[in-house]
Each structure stands twice: as structure tokens, then as C-alpha cells.
Length: 207
Image: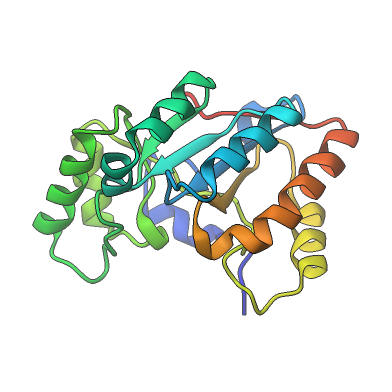
């Protein structure tokens, strides 16, 4: 079963984390986020597409990709998008010791200037969350996931479920990656077009 939204019961284990902005978004704003970049195949296309719809977004970058593609990272900032830390090596918090997890995030912090942090795969233990909060990071999850990485889903299914689900203040996760690009290149323009026609604006996350 694919969960397009996080179950509410999970939230109590991560106090202070951001899941959406529904509590503070009387206007029709949606917050687009893109994980795993920057990427030489996808990032430029995403930036061009966002610009075409006057959309701002938040890019949760992997540290090693920033080191490999500093020019693309610079473009994210030049285009007035927000960046966030997505660890240095896309580490799964459920599979490594907490010390290793924190060191990976700190390593990414050296090349990603942001207090925003999104755990890869959304997997982080309550203890890890508490410790990175003490380091000054703000953990950002999401309210809706696009499943753009899942080639087994039909595009029509993904688009319909996402469009039916999002509400003002939603944080939607997409992926700035090779794996997602075939799906993203078809679906992102349709989603931006449809939501724009419904009066939504697309903003980046600021804390």
C-alpha cells in the first residue's frame, strides 16, 4: 500500500518537525520540494519548468552531489530557491548508528548552508531527530509524496491521487534524480498547470 500522506500518529514521535503549513496558510500556497540533487540530468530542467510557472521550491540536496556539481547548487540559490540538507551520502537513519548518522549530516553541512534537514527515505529515529534539533536543524518531512520514483504506477494514477489530496499549506516531495526524471518530466508540468489554474501559488520553505 502506498501512503500519499504520513499517518498522523507518527508525528508525535518527532516534536518540532515540519509536516505542512496548513496551520498558517490561509492563502492557497503549496510548498514543492525536490530531494537528492543537484543532478546534471534533471536540475536544469526542473529550474526551467519552475520558472515557466513562476514557482519557487525547496531543494533538499545530498552533500556529495553538491561537491560534484557546485555550479548547479549555485543555480538553485541564484534562482531564489531554498536549499536544505539531505545528508552527505543519503544515509538511512534506521540502518546506521546515531553517531555515524550525525557525522554524515555534519559533513553535508560543510557544503550546504541551511538549517533545514530532511531525512533520506523519511527514516530517522526519535533520538536522531532530538539530537539534530539540538544542533540547530529543523526537520522537514512532507504531507504528500508524488511517488515519481515508482515506475510501476501509471502517470494518470499518480497525478490524480496527488491533485485530489493536496490542500493549502501542503508540502509535496518530488525527486531531482535520474530515477524519477522520466515520470517527473511528464507529470510536473501537468501538476503545476492544474494547481495554478485552481489558484494555487508555489512557495519555498523559510524558517
